[in-house]
Length: 208
Image (cartoon, rainbow, N blue to C red; front, top):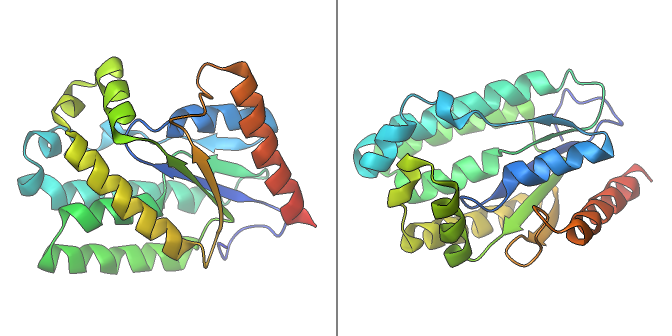
């Protein structure tokens, strides 16, 4: 739990592969009275360059995303209500696991450890699991041009790295697993209600 959080304030981070539904779920959680913080991925000046040439541009891309997320989390602790973000330092670690090596990875981990020391772990980490083929269909459907070069192999590697990181994080945060490939909380109202009920139940249980 973050050292700066008020005792009754709950901090929720959402992690998942590309196009797994992180932003959609965060918006849905506003129905529970949760204050939501959204990632501004396009503010990363290296975002487009990364997808043009990942190996050449991974270090600056991953460090920038990590610092953007850290900065947002550091200021989110001033919220009066429960708050949720559609990004996660755990997901940042998973990206680094598959894109960074040697010296660059060591530098990234040093920055991560300092960021983690300051903001702490979320009370809840929602892990969205989604089949890579479904993620790829969604990527093509939303047509963010830099992402159109993404392959299923990359999505599989990221999902596997994230699953390992979520397992480790379970020692510090309560994990909520949701299969966002099977549960359509983007369009199905019944599925939306089901997901909201699940998360609300977990939040209430944590207050006891």
